[in-house]
Length: 222
Ligand code: C5P
Image (tube, rainbow, N blue to C red; front, side):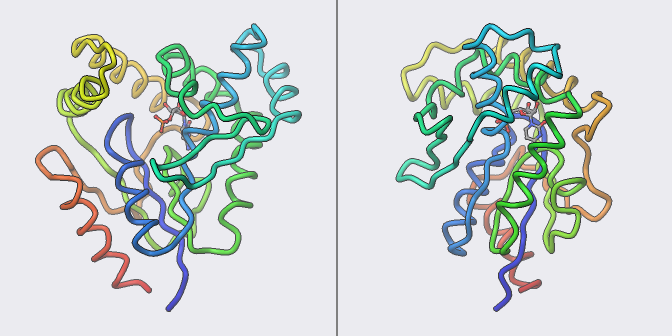
């Protein structure tokens, strides 16, 4: 059996990481959450009071930064310079600024090169915005996950509420729509379905429906 590369792209809060994690576990593949890498450098830049428009300064910072993603019971642990920042990188402060950091060409080039190294030996499920288009253009399976903004905001709202976090549905809708706009309209590697990606609209599907569909596609190609 071949150990292939699986690219999962799509807009914010479409369920990419949930689905990617389950698939990686079922196949005993590694899972790479590329969004967490952009979130980690954003968090560090904020800690250093850096101007997020300053591409040069951000690149300098990134070149002196290690970001490690480790599998854990509850998904994945994000290590920034060896420190656990798993919770910090999900804060709304990071979420609402990460797209500014991620638009810079120099930052993306460095991230893409790190991500390609992680995928080198195959057997990888990687989720993000540009995996099928730029990071792993030769991935055997490319999936583009979609869902309406309303559905995505509702899911995120329910997730927050179940964890006891404060959450405002309308605010989530606005933030998701804004992040999608920034990610789709940026100049460098915008969020876009690869021509050879299979689109799955998850609006009326459960997580397990989505996992089953993707596994069926994977099984045809290994
Ligand atoms: O996937 P997640 O929502 O955690 O991604 C956070 C942000 O990181 C995205 O909104 C986008 O700006 C950026 N990102 C990116 N390219 C990727 C993954 C994430 O630009 N491959």
